[in-house]
Image (cartoon, rainbow, N blue to C red; front, top):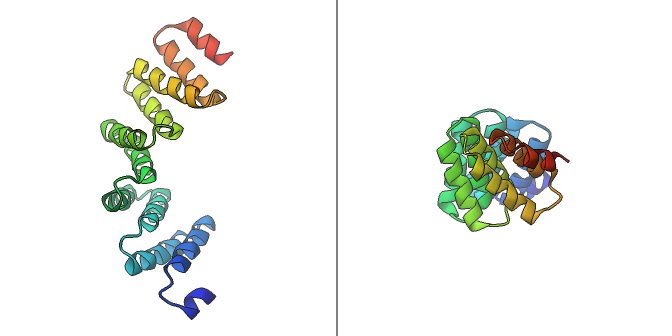
Length: 171
């Protein structure tokens, strides 16, 4: 509050205070501060991303999608915004839209294990287990100690009735 009292146009203060309100789960206060940060700098992709996270927590998915889309419009290389929007598409079972976002996130950052992971889950949901296995393989290549990747790859192997491979992953 002191920073804002001294300089009411200090954007970082609104963003940072909004982040603290978010951590305290005081979402309305967080949104108010992020709204102010965006008002002062309408091109602040971090503020749109953070506000999108809060809308997501409040289960206001359309508003979150709008904020992530705005962040992407302002910075088409914002992998966080693609990942975050992809999560919402996934939860809404709009799998093709989610895959599009994760494809873009992976294109921008080929070492993004989170994007491969969720895309792998989506492929499994769609019954495309070979594609899921490919994504889990990539995670294991990037991080051989990722237990979740082995676990979900094992599940995909079992869907394909390749039980020995599944057991090997579980071991």
